[in-house]
Length: 86
Length: 291
Image 1 (cartoon, helix red, strand yellow):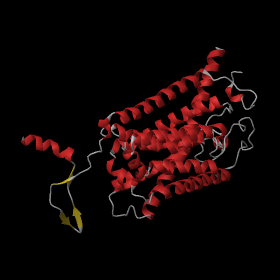
Image 2: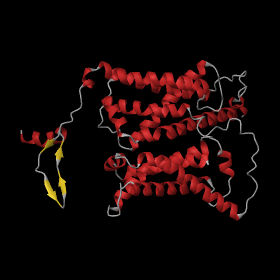
Image 3: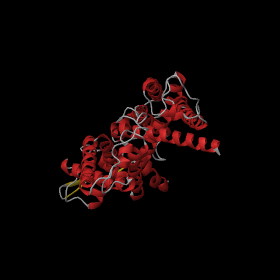
Image 4: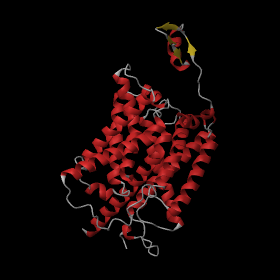
């Protein structure tokens, strides 16, 4: 009865073992956490802001050996040196 | 003593079921993990849409679990399909998050909503793969007790033929999966974000998943594979050999699609080959089981 692997007969439904219950407990809590986090981002307006995707072109474009080199900075990376001048 | 043995058997069965589910997920979900559009869709998705993805996956996987599933034990009760669905979704979420972490698509800098979107959208094919695990390449539920006729000792020529057949099957599987990914820009994009420790992590994951699919997941022919005679036929040596063959297939495809040229630095070759090596190794493992 406690041999789960011998349960190919459809009339004989073995009970779940403790191992199966423990993994089910872990799996359901994981799923609940993920669903809870999605619900949190849904309700929390700050999470709804679009990401900052603008870039700053701070240096001139240079060409070398047929390749163009463009140095781009994101506003987050550029914020630190700017603060230093304030 | 008997109780302790029964408990350890229950745990061994459970772990085997979970490994089979995860391997099914990797077989089905890996091509989509190398698709940047899915990362973007996940990044941009609003929470209601993410919730819809969770609910839709749950319903689809529930119906799949009513007929198939990832467990050796077949149970027909709706309640069991429900619990298996929860577990399949958890396996899908953990495995897709693990690969996204390895590929550096999921870092501490990524905002929570984006991370959730990426993991949940990538977990959809993974979870479907988990619930289809028994369907992939058959299963060994009824074949466990059957005696195998492959246990006779074979001569050296047969061993060589078996090894060549394995190499061919690995190459075939690796090329089938790799052809979907190697011409795309994802390999270059991912290579730009990877450092040496992450490449080592990808190598370890490739070997582990390949070993799991062929020797632990209980897909069809696993018994045959363990008994097959050949030069590299021990599980560990076969796993390493097939990994090297899959890397070779990855290199050939990257060169074939002009993603890499001989004038490129060797580090670029190494990074891109190891990155493409993960899906090609999974394809190679499936190829060895199928042929």
